[in-house]
Length: 148
Ligand code: HEM
Image (tube, rainbow, N blue to C red; front, side, top):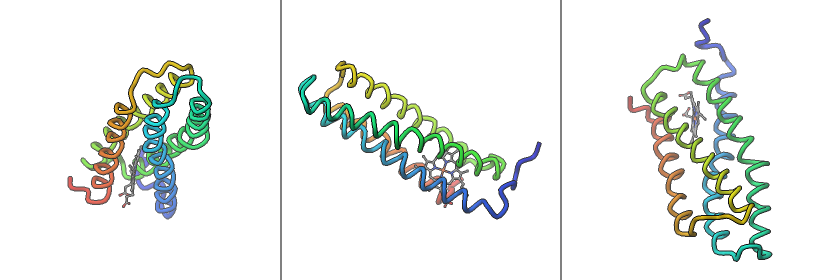
């Protein structure tokens, strides 16, 4: 079955939806490591610890997880419209898979905090903040400049 071009005039609307959801998703990828850096400095089971646990749970459940699923759905619609062609798209897909794995790591660290079992320092989480930043820069250059 050939899907290429199937979105027709809806293509730009789907692309707009994709970029909006990507912004919500990336906001979470940048906020969560920063939350964890502050959270790591709070004493276990203190009032501050409990407040961070709730903030992290709500951010992931209400914004970040649904945004990731929808950004993927709209992105894959665009990719099938384009017939999955272009070196830029292939490299982008690899990078967004890495980003999705990073999302999985954030979800795991959130669970560790929720059980009072955080194993990392605030410095570690500050370093982790660089991962989504670098991937976002590369992905935007790939989709806008399309160097190959
Ligand atoms: C989740 C998996 C993703 C898939 C399958 C995907 C796929 C795509 C495809 C096929 C396009 C159309 C490009 C065009 O019309 O030239 C697109 C556009 C775009 N994507 Fe993604 N994408 C994903 C995630 C992301 C992420 C994580 C970011 C940002 C960090 C991002 C940023 C953008 C931007 C800014 C555009 C608009 C480019 C333009 O038309 O100028 N995407 N995406």
